[in-house]
Image (cartoon, rainbow, N blue to C red; front, side, top):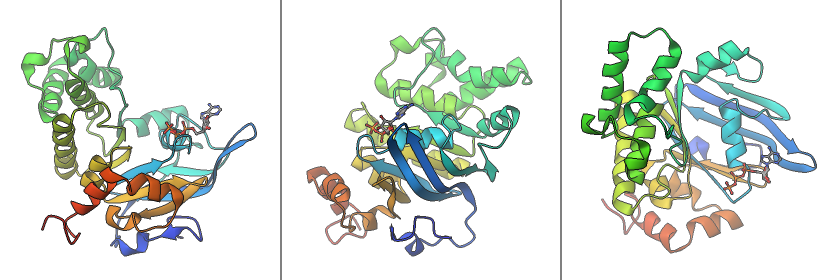
Amino acid sequence: MSSVTDNAMDCASTTPQTGAQPIIEIENLCTQFGDVIVHENLNLTINQGEIVSLVGGSGSGKTVLLRQMLGLNHPTRGTVRVFGEDINRITPQQLQQLRNRWGMLFQHGALFSSFTVFDNVAQPMRELRVLPKQLIRDAALLKLQMAGIGPEHALKMPSDLSGGMIKRVALARALALEPELLFLDEPTAGLDPNASESFVDLIRTLRDEMQLTVVMVTHDLDTLFALSSRVAVLADKRIIAYCEPGKVVEFKHPFIETFFRGERGQRAIEALPDHPDGDT
Ligand SMILES: Nc1ncnc2c1ncn2[C@@H]1O[C@H](COP(=O)(O)OP(=O)(O)OP(=O)(O)O)[C@@H](O)[C@H]1O
């Protein structure tokens, strides 16, 4: 079956996917709130090791789709399989086990404001109730270090941190249980260009080191072009295009033209390695 709906502008076949293992499979998803239809027969498959960016206009249903992948929202019809499990047909205990296999970075970090940096990262490990204290301590400091936060910051409170540091601590927390899958909601929103660039480098390094699969919602074109193996465009209630960033911009659709063809989009496209004016 195609990874996007029939008649969609599908260039997924141009991306080599031989032997790729699906991590998320969404089939014929329909979502309706009262009279409002948000998704209609939406299909999307995300394979192991990919970094997929989900883009779409305001109100197009990106957040709802992300929450459905996390098992926080239920579709009206259709299936959402994560790691091969239909997450709307499993028990709460099975869903909790799946949740331990993924990490989520919320847009504003969503740290517990009354917890120190260290306690924020240790919390998911403590909740498992099986890990010894010393192991949690070492693992939390290691995750902070992986996210670029030194031990000297471990006892600070979130209110003492810059926006970039909050994102890094939230990332360390998302990595606490060594996830195979990472969800990022607007990971670079609110960061200055330098902090944004180093955060992008960090995500790329972690993906390579931990063989992570990454799903992110982003409006930031620099982040999108720098990280995505594929871009899924949500418009007209479904995924209208799903392919490499350099190819997705070629589709003729009002949303794609507005989103990618602005000044920043042009700059990001020209910086692509295979663009005639881009880096070699
Ligand atoms: N719990 C809910 N009850 C009713 N309608 C909802 C609910 N959650 C979302 N919606 C509606 O679903 C639609 C999609 O919302 P969603 O938040 O997923 O959009 P989005 O693409 O993330 O937008 P943005 O980029 O502005 O955040 C909107 O019309 C929203 O009002």
